[in-house]
Structures are given as C-alpha cells and as structure tokens.
Length: 231
Image 1 (cartoon, one colour):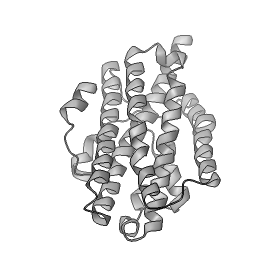
Image 2: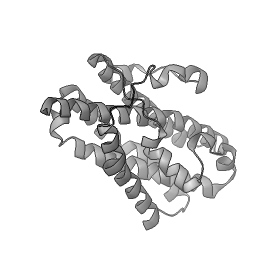
Image 3: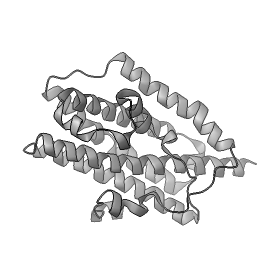
Image 4: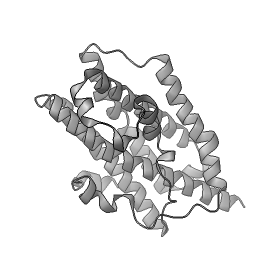
C-alpha cells in the first residue's frame, strides 16, 4: 500500500510539474515578443527573460526524461492545474492563450501587471520546491530529488528581471490582494485539485509529450548544451 501511495503521489506530482514547466516556457515566448517590441534596446532585460525561458525548457526536459526512465507517460492534466494559467485568468480575465499580446505591448499598466504575476508565480514555485525537498516520497527518488535541487538553484534568477523592471520604472510591488490570489490558487491546487487527481482512477495518460508540436506552435529553439547536460 505504501509503495502504491508513493508511486501515485510521484505520478501526480510529476504530471502537474511537466505541464507547468511546458506552459512556463511557451508562455515566456510571448513575454519575450512583448519585451522586444516594447524596448528593443533593453538587451539586459531581454537576455534575462530568455535565460528564464531556457531554464523552464530545461526543467521540462528533466521531467520528461524522468518519465521516460520510468517507462510511462504523465497524466493528461490541463490548464486547470496550471498556476500561471489561473493567475492570468483571474488578473486579466482571459486565458493565457487569448491574452492580447499587442495590448500588453502598448499599455504600461498591463505589462506592469504581467511582471507582478510572473514574479509572484516564480516565488511561489521556489517555496513549493523547498517544501518538496523535505518530502519523504521525493527524497526516496534520487533523480527526482536532483531535479528539484536544480530547480531550487535556478528559481531566484527567474523572478529577478520582472521585479527589477518594476523597481527601475517606479512601479509598485504586489499588493496584499495579489498575494492573496496567489495563496488562494496554491491552496486550491494543494487541497482540492491535487487530491482529486490523486484519487481519480479515470484520468488517462497523455498519448504524446506536451512539446510534440512546439516547432509548429511556438517556433521552439533547441536546448543549449548546458541544458542537455543538466538534464
């Protein structure tokens, strides 16, 4: 029974993470597009966000290889389990895929709002990884433990460029209600959605990897050599 609980927990955990990492780097492609259009001369900001994108893609590939080593596919979860998906839907009142990139480019207040959402999401991810690195089931899996240690090391650089932009342009930091939304989304996932997924035997497996159509949908770029090595 304990072994089944452990395997089911890791399956659910890995499925949620692989979805969120894929959603992360594909969504960042649109952020990079907006920044390049808004401030093409801000090479430092563009480079920092591109580095964030590379890390998210690297993390996705680590989870994919973890599943491949196990000889299984992730559960077929969707944006219901995406933290950034829920945050964007609440703050912008539209799904990520329908977010008006041109409006974000044209209006400083929308780009400011997006920076706060991304920064809060990345800080939440860092706290969650710290918790998982104390989890018995995770620590029993040396490969998964290594993946989370790499993520833990990478995360601080992910919220840094967005918070730096807010400071440099005299924009406000997140307010209590934005932090409350972040906490609500996390609690909703932890106490409602994750247990539902854990206990639901009818959720099927994915039949293809999330990145199967990246070349077509997102103009995906190959992983740098250091990302392959880390995975």
